[in-house]
Length: 78
Image (tube, rainbow, N blue to C red; front, side, top):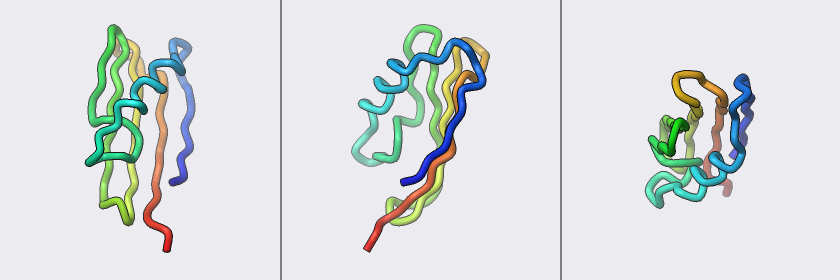
């Protein structure tokens, strides 16, 4: 998988992102779950495709402010 992201907001918390990634579901192992919330933080992830070829986008909000975004893509390697 390849990914690139940025942190446009000052309230970004790397610990929250780590917590999100540890909660990835077995049927969606790309990054984190579709939605994850804790306190004022909320994480959203959208994925298109199957594990053999996929692309996605994730973002984190603090309240209503987007503080993190990441594009990712990947697939199976023979």
